[in-house]
Amino acid sequence: MAMEMRLPVARKPLSESLDRDTKKHLVVPGDTITTDTGFMRGHGTYMGEEKLIASVAGSVERVNKLICVKALKTRYNGEVGDIVVGRITERRRSAEDELAMRGFLQEGDLISAEVQAVFSDGAVSLHTRSLKYGKLGQGVLVQVSPSLVKRQKTHFHDLPCGASVILGTNGFIWIYPTPGHKEEDAGGLTANLEPVSLADREVISRLRNCIVSLVTQRMMLYDTSILYCYEASLPHQIKDILKPEVMEEIVMETRQRLLEQEG
Image (cartoon, rainbow, N blue to C red; front, side, top):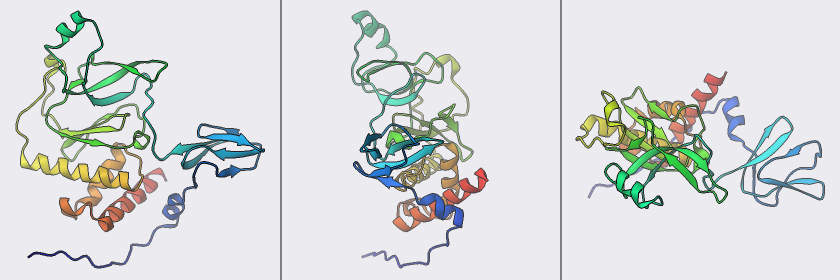
């Protein structure tokens, strides 16, 4: 019977800047953040007895005199222009609309879309009227906390490793083979169901495990952090990436590169 054993190894020393970056000010509800009355209260905080107190569990963030607490886990709150990934579960338009759209999109389809409007109860209205939105074909879906998806100008990224990602601000991430050509006349309403090559499947699997590693270490997800983590993982087999010591190693290297890039 095959048996795998993992022995302790010496950790790579952290740079001083990386060590400072990883020491975040974490709080839980009820913790006093500061007694300095010169700060402004941001989301995730409230005033009590001339003290600024945390109302959620998370990390303290300061922008000039504004203090807020970024929750470790949070429900997605949509904003107009957000890119989201999701599955159609039901329709709420008129019967005519349903009949017209069923030829293109049906319940159960996985799609990417843009938030068109946000209502008072938190519900959102979506549209797929651009060619880059619509049905998703062959790929892998990863669900993460929406708080870990960094908001950027674009959430569609063709990575140089040969795969593409859609970083949904609602916490759903779609990884798929980079298409060789754009089906512009399809309007995003037809899914590509062609078989995926072994090489593409391996790249997608590696990216998926890298994203899981970043999420485990509470790293923000965006194209650069994902690519750096992918490159750091290359010395390891895909199945080994999710080992705790490997996750820690590749995420640490990713942090270091990001800090060096920021200067």
